[in-house]
Image (tube, rainbow, N blue to C red; front, side, top):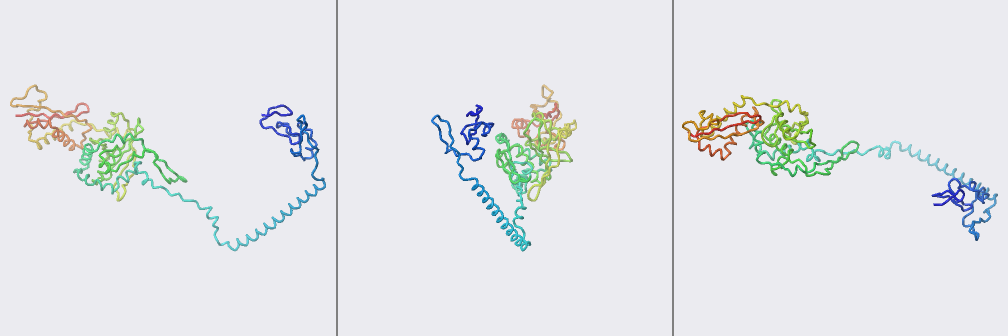
Length: 448
């Protein structure tokens, strides 16, 4: 940092006088402001070159007398000469410009019928090509996955399985699908823990021109056939498989619900069927749920449904036809809850008595109907045993009555301990009750 030679102020970027060589601040940089000793030279506007300076033994700067390079008369003549040459140059430029303008005007007149290529190129803008979002994103977005994974070509791959599971009506078919999935498809907990996919969209003039999945690429939708082949999947894979099997059985349309929760960021996807304007949910395992029971079941699991977007899927010649037809609110779920009646319990009891008498060697015997309240066997009986089965009331709905009866019978006959007792007996009775939300079924066995 230097100091001003005149006022002594510190100056970061000082000015150097061309006439005395001193360093000055902005305020005192001109010769008139710092009493320059060579002020007369400055007034003549002819500063001497620094190479002409000499120094005294004491270090003081001495300027040689200013000697003009030419007389004022010659300088004036040179100035006049320069001005004259400038005007001549301007005149020549104007003449050439005028001649060029006339020539270009003639060319333009003779070619006025030719389109201007320059103008055309400037006005044409590149047309952005929209990307096929279905092709790019069906592995990661539900609405596109429904179209592609449930296309006719994909349904053909599970056609044989669908025909195996198809029942006499949609009730039995839906029940059979869930029962098969419960035995053959396991939940993929490893896939469930993969971070969700993130999609980056590239746009041009509000048109999506490209997409890229930048993370979570392994968190993708499986086709129904892939889920069958792998034997595992997450909720959306179960939903696509269930919907695919129903469509392959020629039940169309079917429905998929995209559920969001009040207390969770991660949602849930389930399949649904619609019977007499009432939705029933098919979610990986039995039972088939009405909306109200499913809502309360989710609360028991610690999950509070906020709403569910409804997709209607119909078979198409190529891709499935998918429509977003509405949203179910929490209130819509709650309104559809079914309550079991005493008539339902009596109907279950009678049909189970008929089923066991028809499909086993046992004979119904009202004489042992109170065996569960006795301490001793009635006279004439040598053996007695009582088995109690428990089912959540959600397993029963009048529309799925026949499937429930078959389900209970299969559970009994599939239990080795129960069948061992059945082989020892020749008499039976069945009692059905409701304990809170649990259906109790007592199989009373006796040997006469």
